[in-house]
Image 1 (cartoon, rainbow, N blue to C red):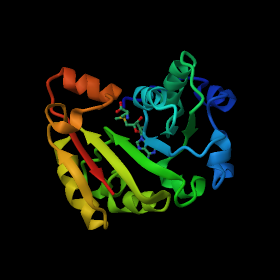
Image 2 (spheres, protein in one colour):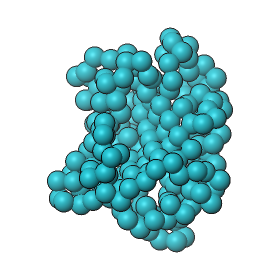
Image 3 (cartoon, rainbow, N blue to C red):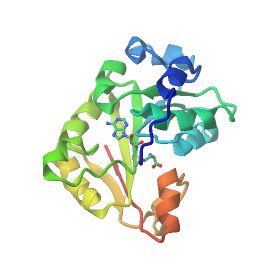
Length: 210
Ligand code: SAM
């Protein structure tokens, strides 16, 4: 995502009633935070948050956490959040590397990675959100049987992920190189990036792993 620093973004996020300011204090207490026993799903790198907010509105019987590391990007999501009514979503401004400091093993049932930065250089491979390093982190917070759902337009990153994910001990349950013309399209919720790329005629890849 092209990042333009927005002056005052940090301060606005620090005052937002939709953002949890001290996420590590929630570890092990997420059910209390949401006030129910519903499953909790999270999107890593939510950008402006269209996807996760749409899910939250569609599924009042699930809880959602939108995670974005850049305040200037999250701020755009918060502006959108102000316009909707829902009580089953919280936002965190943090790096996904810190997930195990914020969630106990089993507190999340599903993680969504949508149009994650590709980090094409080999020396940056560890930064890819589907690298073995990150897959190990997800295992520390997901429930047994929990899933990761990954969408991208980047075929190289997708091919890499089809190898890196099983190599990290995960099972790929389904995948497609052309989501919008596949059975996986049923119930698909588009992200901001997905709408843009699909509009340009690009094929969207998706995989689900456990
Ligand atoms: N998911 C949105 C979509 O599909 O429209 C945004 C995609 S954008 C290309 C990727 C986002 O992931 C950026 O906003 C970036 O800041 C965020 N991101 C990348 N690595 C991250 C990390 N390690 N932790 C949290 N957010 C991250």
